[in-house]
Length: 633
Image (tube, rainbow, N blue to C red):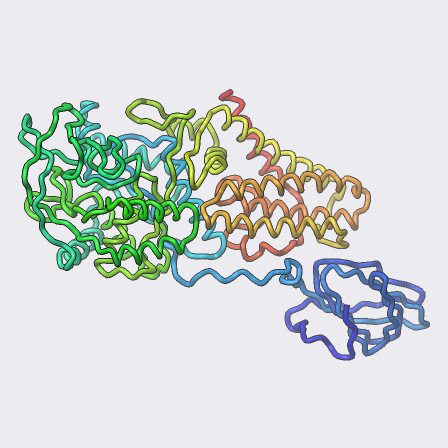
């Protein structure tokens, strides 16, 4: 509290609330403590001002400034009316005791997610990685006021599709069409949305232009050269064997791998370097025949600069990429990148040679960059098996053709997801298919549990029993908080819900909730959703206790209005914290409170004035979630 003879500079009279107050002789005001910064300007009379254990005589001409939550009361012990003008505003910086968060960058955050091959549906293992994490990042960044552009698609032109079509006795085109439609449906059910979704073989004018510019830039590069290699060859079919049709030992880690990417170490495979290659279908031992292919020379200085950029991202998920790069360099396993492939389908580069998978992935990122030229951050979410091609080779390719450093993709790598302690396997039919599971259960609960078990440095393990237990527990905790809050509001009845006098536990709850929002935002930005959810669990416990203790004030309407206002603030904050993971429920909470995701961040400090307390739509949503679980059980 400050008493001065001049109006305080800290209060801008043009942007504050103003009210004229009169205290009759032998009367006094109520003791106030609230979240506003306030100034009383005495215009007539005199009185005794009390603030905590301090007491001061004040009179006309005095200006008294109160900090948020500072108690204050004035008694008129004179013979005439005591009049003063009160100016007040909410000083949120003081309340949270921290500087304002920096404004979001002017540039757009570009977010890419790994392109699945359209040779079958998605399973929960697929969803748990790049699709969930990329969408969490998109929603979290957008919620904070930042601009994003997200892209994904399906990846054609790999002979994964040919192998699957042959095994199922269907045509390539039929398999692709059916799979692509299913993948789109899976992602839509999962609430993973994209600004650009490329089909397996884009035919738009924009894509053709991007492909032409990209190919020309690469072929004009001084790093590209032709090399003669000894490539795996099938004498029985008289053809060169590439990618999914050839297997052998990985030259980096020794594990068995196809001629594309090693699931053990993530190394991108040059088929000519596979050890003891054999045909994955006929199992015949392959010989080698000479052929000339195009390669992109790897420059150690450029790799070092890329390593610095990856490291500076400084999250556990991006550090996986950095650690892998250092491991490859230590083993001298990184060799020049093959830019052309001998498979049948693909974008022709020269004669019968088409773009390699690494080169085509670079093309798709390049096309996204052309759509979003204002980006100054580019994140690429992928699985561990893509760490070399997507995390190292693609940014290298883009850098070689002149893409600025700040626009190069930084890989956010996810480890494999297990199902009941075994790796998800499409071929072995050890999988839970996304489409059917998301129709049986709420996508919010599936996203929630996958985020809950996510680890940036280790494999996650999905267990049905754990899913049921965790989902039921969270829904019950949320239901209790909203049900008991709704019941508490019945004691207040009609009227505006506006924070009045604050107790210490009110202040502590507010600060805890506000800090939780900041903490969750940082966790999501660092790809640590499980840490965010642990903080949300703590908030739920605190809010549940707060609601229970608020029953003590059910007959004290003046105090109860503060408790209800803070409870509504807690609901809005829970929606804010949960929105990246549970968008459907969070949107319902925001709708019930009369806010939306576009304004939630700007209003995150405000304890709002509410006209009503109606959480029935949220309770209906939670009941629906719970019923779907119970029905399946």
